[in-house]
Amino acid sequence: MRLRYNAITDVEGLRVGHATDLVGVTGCTVVLCGGGVVGGVDVRGSAAGTRDVEPLRPLHLVDVVHAVLLTGGSAFGLAAAEGVMRFLREREVGFRIRPGGPPIPIVPAAVIFDLGIGDPQAYPGPDMGYKACLEASDGEFERGNVGAGTGATVGKLLGIARATMGGLGTASIGSSDGAVVVGALVVVNAFGDVVDLKDGKVVAGSRSPHMGGFVNTASALRESGMRSGQASHATTIGVVATNIRLDKGGAVKVAQMAQDGLARVISPVHTMYDGDTMFAVAPAGGPTPAEVTRLGSMAAEAVALAVMDAVREAKGVGGVPAARTLGTVA
Image (cartoon, rainbow, N blue to C red; front, top):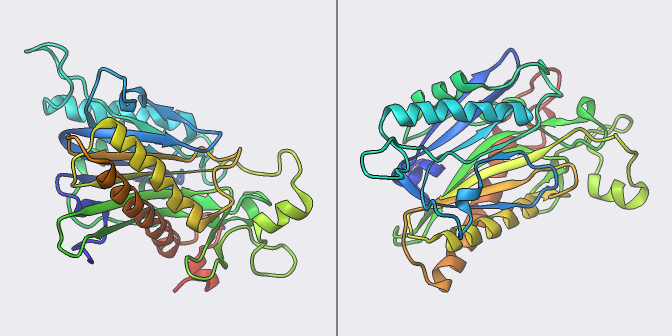
């Protein structure tokens, strides 16, 4: 089933907004979750930068998430979450410790390392986080090099100078009767290459300095490895969402299975240089194992499609070309 927007906003109740710094080549993206949802998280990369992910663990007291922030700027960009919290607090949205007490917005966040392109001193702060919330929409939104995907690149084996632009992408899928909807939003900033879903050919990655075309990163690593310090920092981060009720355990499992979507289209993935992190959000409830399995399978598919959407919508930035200009995607 093709949904209205082919975006994560096909899941009712979600809004997505960006703040973009085209001069510094960085930005942030927020997914606002209404009055609160259940959340889960899965971290596979070994260089993750996150904030406030503990409430997503099944044994944590807090059982609600009010927004998820994806941001550039490496660890500095986590400051943008303060602006998201300010926006939500002003609207009386948050977790309440006691009746009548002040709301405490729960805003998990994850970062990409985009300091190798644009201004290395530029990173999203509280004002950009707040602006992203003001811009949030429950309909169509911009993709490619916008928000957290502004400075995203892929194919870091030979460094940023030989990389290709990544970006921000989204997709959604649904059951034939329309009862089940799963959406994904992904910021693609991988160390590895993005490969075609159908034939496995590299469509965006490390560009060969001698022959034209791309170096196949997985093949190059197999044959000769890599020198220490050769790779720029990377990371692919995202959010999957569904309209079907989950508890925290179910949301964590869906986030885990969603990571399989990255493995279908990024090679290699979950490396020592990546901080691959996937969030999952859903209405609160008690799912069956069969429901969790179904949603996780759909989430993986949506994530793979969102990655392809990101590189398809990307444009050349700061001297780094995009797959579209290289003629490797339609």
